[in-house]
Length: 341
Image: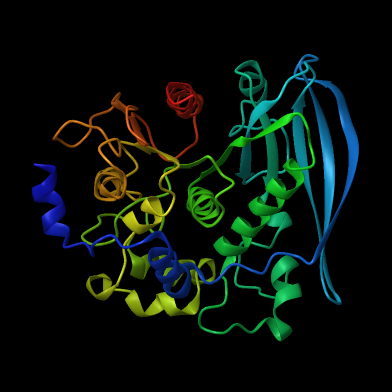
């Protein structure tokens, strides 16, 4: 059944990781900004005894420098107080406050994880202003070339800088860094994991169009719809595929496959038709051949709510509900990670 459904999508064949990333960056997201020549960190302990004394919350300021250009942004580090070397999430989020509806901080600490937490607007605004934040540092007069990064690529760049900071901390296990995000930030988390092999796992929640979901024959949001409403998320080359997905030399299974042989976990919601859970699931199936026999292990059918496919290097969950990042999504992700420890 699944092979027949994929055949109807007429997807391009998988290529090498470098070839797939080149297409995704040049034609969809834009090339990520260059790594800084120099980085400085300033850490301030914002809250002691955070999460009932189980963790401390440090606000960290990053100063990134390229020649005579400089960009400064804050993020948070939630570090367990107990001694140890912890796996950790690099979470890019819609809200600056911690904890919030998308981050069950104490529960993640209880499960043995640390969290590096980035508010996405601290990198650049979620609009078509390319004079704001990192965009304002990169672009003279806010003008871009056709393959220059959109906002998603800039947010992914920010997640990479949090990994740079993690490398300075003895309490974090750099072999167990997980990129996580929801919706447009789920797209960002997958791109961050695809473009930085320091991530052990990339996780997206309801990332949908131009994220985990195949674009060809997708229901709900299309490339045309997303480029019309959010053109600034992508490079300008992407616009030519609006209402013309069939000519794309790639599709979103390339994004998932570019993370191989590392772990990928995708969460979907059955009522999130705009994201299209079937297309997210089929992208996992299509990407699995980049692995050996342990790619995506599932039954030969479309998923139903409650399904948890955790056996392979690609994991997938489908729950009841709509477009939000729930506690259930976090627990499913943790169960998947524990399965592969």
